Length: 180
View 1 (tube, rainbow, N blue to C red):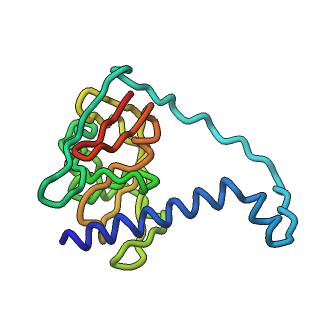
View 2: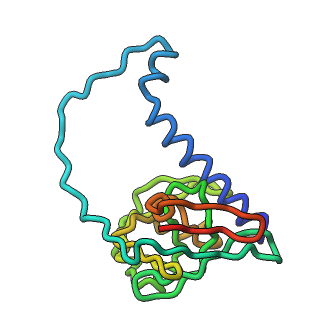
View 3: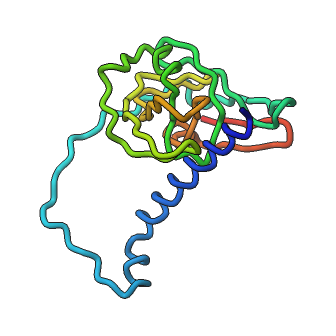
């Protein structure tokens, strides 16, 4: 089970990091390939996302390293439910198992599973959701983007759609410190 979780986390993280880096450096990628970057045919104005409201600025949360497996496990409240996350700085998004999505009050049958992903178990589809809140200790973030992965993910991942909004994420030999 530990190897499968780690393998899933690594695969999802690698895909996310590769996509982000390619997008951020797309001009260089086109230049290295000797291609002109295609012009957009039409600019489309997207609606403004809801503001990301944060609570308890100035907080520090310490997540101890697990003596059993060496990972960092965060106990969190998601919407109104309780979820245990594997903290994964390499995951581009918070990813919820279907069980944890239900704990968070999401109605799985109402979700649209149209986001292609790849896990250790193979290709899969996920649903993009907006979580009302995720609270880890004294740090609460609102309107956090996440994916619901109905199959192939054994544990929920606390990824960069949450961690990236923090002032600092610092690993020490015995704990992971989240600063907001």
